[in-house]
Length: 228
Image (cartoon, rainbow, N blue to C red; front, side, top):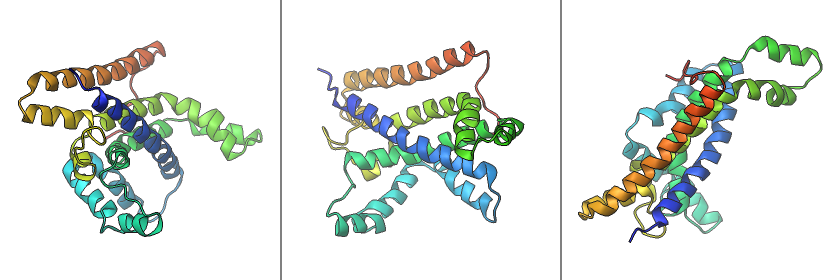
């Protein structure tokens, strides 16, 4: 009998992580596009690091931050009398951190592809920066942003290393699909592990296939310029 709890939890974690990375990734990418300042290259390198670091290293750094003795963990304990370590919120944070670089790079590439003269034309017609952003920049950058959203969702859905470090494997509470696959295989329950593999593969395939179909319907290709 298949336990659907890891599937439901993984989808919830991936969507909540997507909300975090979409807000932070798009905002920072837009800011970095227009701002030049000392140390910008260093900041961008830090933002991209979770993409190249082993997930377990990212998880260890998060553990130092939100653990009971970490600065954020201690702050939450002293002010709100709560902890996010080994809770679903920790899994959401882990998914968001590892997925963030994909959203940031996709959004950055999308914004760089927007014709600045169209934005300037909107400004000369009296549009403020907020209106230019929503009526000109976002519509023109939308294909790249959608690609980033799909990739980020898929990355958060499949996160394992960072999640097990900060959320653990608590059945019914923090056990996501990748964790369920690993521990099912570890206990030699290959049938259950195989079912979970098929489920997560079907979800990610559907997301990427849908993105491909949507992109082709627009007569374009995936916006990859500036992603790497």
